[in-house]
Length: 109
Ligand code: 5GP
Ligand code: ZN
Image 1: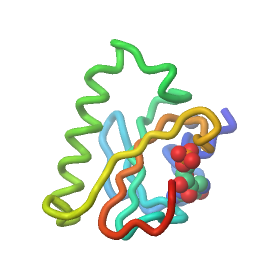
Image 2 (image 1 turned 30 degrees about the horizontal axis):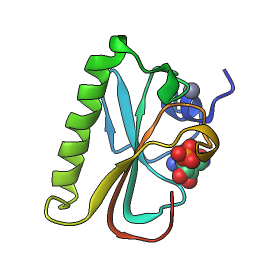
Image 3 (image 1 turned 60 degrees about the vertical axis):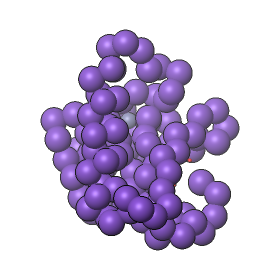
Image 4 (image 1 turned 135 degrees about the vertical axis):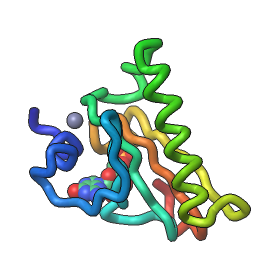
């Protein structure tokens, strides 16, 4: 499939993967919108929020467990952070991903 994030997951396109499990990968956004800008990406090609259903309950828990680990690792617990999922025309890569933005924001994501 011609999907940018599938290619990153298969390591056909280089990225600086900072965490990986059987079901997800984490790598920095190429064009960061905040001091910390990580993308948490399920390995399964899920096109977007509209495809999320009960079968992904465990995956979603793992994603937010990962968010909490990354928040601690990046010393964001008592600072500013947020998790963003874009959809519709706000989503540019059609493979579900969660932006973790921390520290000073630079721009809209
Ligand atoms: P979206 O707009 O779909 O929510 O976010 C897609 C994000 O992927 C953007 O913030 C963009 O900077 C990032 N991005 C696009 N191409 C690449 C790439 O080749 N490598 C990495 N690491 N990030 C990318
Ligand atoms: Zn994909």
